[in-house]
Image 1 (cartoon, rainbow, N blue to C red):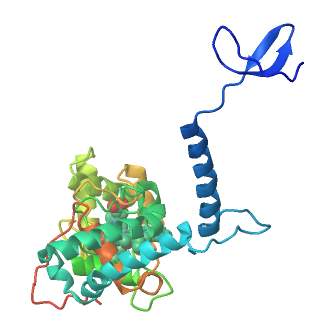
Image 2: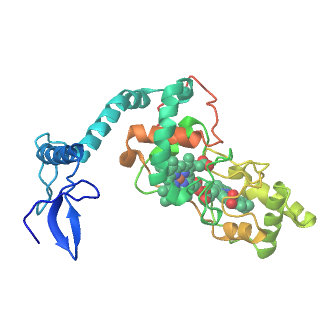
Image 3: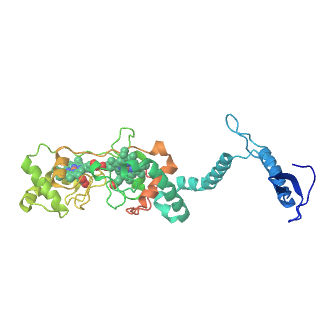
Length: 301
Ligand code: HEC
Ligand code: HEC
């Protein structure tokens, strides 16, 4: 090493004076523009940590002078959406359900809100796609085969009060009695007749005997031709759509030990707006029916 400044003869650049084994280090300073950019980022970093949340603390972080937080931003956004939906929610609560479809914007809003209500509250029984579960007696809500009715008003009532539950005095109720007192041959004949109603494979002679048993014991609820009765949620037995299964054995089992579906009431849990929203959603799944009597009050309660 030496303290004499030297110019490297090859490049014409000053050396730092450091030399190892005869190899000398050239003194090439960083370009000005690079240095100033570097200083600028340091200044920017300091200002940023003063204005915005930056330094981690034991719990949380420094808040920053501007008081900005992503959580606060989300809360503000939610408040903004709620505010813009407040009008629609209010209208939904007051609309005549039978006429909801006439208000396109409100109907679209209701169906969309209803979709998430359904996913959160109904899908565990009726299935994520609302296709139901036959073995468990959870009805398919996609088709137009309704136990209790498929108008907006009918569906809203079912959702509000539920079916055969102990929590709501206005729940829909009905009971199919047990026919285990019928002899084995009679049960067999009745099952053949029930299957014949849907055009399923059956024994013709047995079905004829079963027709009489059906007329005496079943037609009061299921109708003379087996079309069912929505007043009491008695299923249509002639459409090959089954709540409990349509095999010979499943029908006999239903006659001996009738199973009856229970659904909880939703009025108190969901509130009026969500009851109406999920009703609009279910109604729009494919099987929704128009109200017979449009003059009827739409509150459906
Ligand atoms: C605990 C299970 C369960 C839950 C949760 C449930 N349901 Fe049901 N639901 C049933 C059963 C069981 C039936 C059929 C009752 C019967 O046999 O009459 C039914 C019937 C219905 C019907 C009548 C169908 C018809 O053919 O008339 C509608 C509409 C309905 N549910 C909508 C809903 C909606 C909307 C929700 C969510 C807010 C919901 N259900 C939540 C079990 C449930
Ligand atoms: C008091 C009314 C009543 C009478 C009488 C009655 N049922 Fe029912 N039946 C019902 C109801 C209500 C249901 C629906 C149960 C449920 O929702 O889970 C039902 C369900 C059924 C089912 C299941 C349908 C399916 O889709 O899986 C069959 C089959 C049936 N009944 C056959 C009969 C036959 C056959 C008789 C006569 C021997 C009879 N019922 C008498 C009310 C009745």
